[in-house]
Length: 301
Image (cartoon, rainbow, N blue to C red; front, top):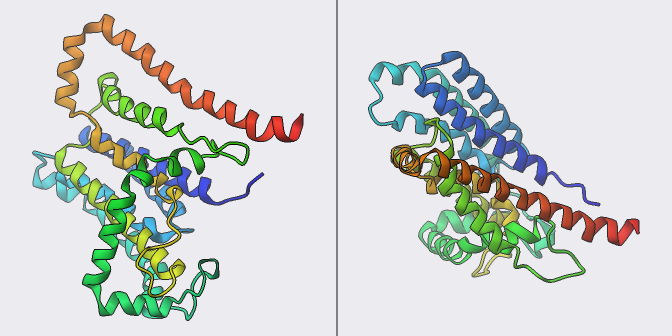
């Protein structure tokens, strides 16, 4: 019923984030072959995801978090130099090809769906009064954070769980609880040490924040009428690719997860595993309900 590039972007960026964790784990195990494979998959997925929307370019720099691993020796950091140079080149290419041209030579008009938009006027305002724009940006981000990352706009409406036949948006409550539950329990079931440490989480948080700033700024430049005291056009679906790296921040440290795993013992851990897989069936069940209510019952029966 709908043809959109959003699933492609979301799929590529989430695949890149998953490959990033495998890359961290391969670096920890000093498996250069696996690290090269995971880095290539991660970089390729990030590039494919960023080509339609370069606002996600800072995600390419997330692998730099590997340098913040506690206790890493200088020779190990030098060994990673090649990987990180490639990340910098990719990031510079994305910025130079898609974002800088808008800053250097903005168009007279923006997205006409937003009204009487003007990229020239908006870029000019940002450059003339960066502090004023920063205050507007901070105010909008703070007011929209719940909506963008845990609200119905990103977990239900843009996920096709709300349609023209119903206005119910309460699905985001079980979704949010499910996500938080998995963040707490999954490290208990995973023996690997790929989960980032505190400094690595900080870097991932900063890159996620940089992507958010670019998303808001792109909408301010292209979709907001000059003179508005709000930023128009921002939708929750733009933040879905950022949800996975963001929720990594809530993962338990591996030391704490290991201590809890020992305390629970094998029997309780097996019960938790069963509960984990039971929780994983909830999205599948909601998807079946969605297909029935939005496609089969409306068009096939």
